[in-house]
Amino acid sequence: MSDEIKCPVCGKVGIPNYRNEDIVCPCCGSDLSIFRVIDKIPQGGRSKKNVWMPIAAVAILAAAVFGGILLFKPNTPQIIQDNALEARIAVLQDSIGTLNYKLNSQPQQISPTSDGFKYVVRKGDSFWSISKRFYHTGTRYEEVATANGLDSKSKLTVGDTIIIKQ
Image (cartoon, rainbow, N blue to C red; front, top):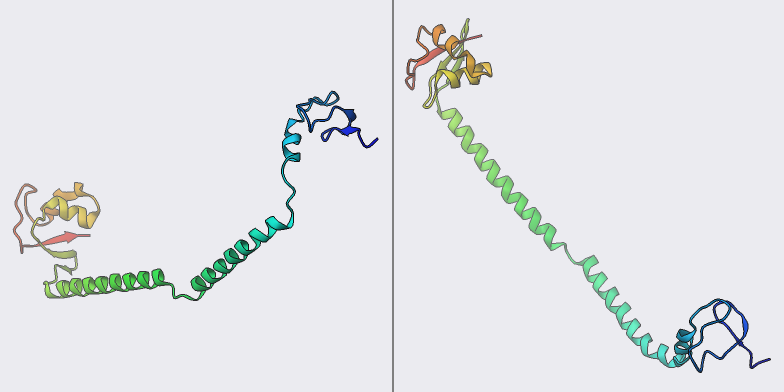
C-alpha cells in the first residue's frame, strides 16, 4: 500500500508516479509535473534559517537606528519653513509700513460734503473711472460731469476738485 501514489490535487489513489515522469491526473485532469519540480527542491531546514537570521537581525537593527535618528533629530525642513514664513511676514510688514507712509503723506482726496463727497482728481482719472469707483458702474459718467457743471467730453486736470453726489 505504501507504493500507491496519491494525486496531490484531488487525492485519487493509484495514479502513476508523477515524481518520475510528467503525469496528468486521470481523475481531475491536473498537470502534476510542477509537483515533481517541487519535490526536487532540497529540504535544507536549519542551515538556510541560520544564513538569513543574521541578515534579518542586521536589517532590524538598522531600521531601529534609522527610526531613532528620525525620531530624535530636529525637524530641519520645518525650521527652514518657519524661517521662510518669518521672512515673508517681515516683507509684508515692511510693505504695510510703506503703504501707510504713502497714504499719510498724500493729501486727502475724498472729503464729505452735505451733498456727497469732494474728490481730488488724480493722474489717469476720467469721468468713467470716477463713476466706476463711486457708483460701481462706469455708465453714470455723464451724471458725474453734469453735477460739476462740465461736459462729459471735458478733460479732467490733476488736482481739480469735483463733487460726487450720493
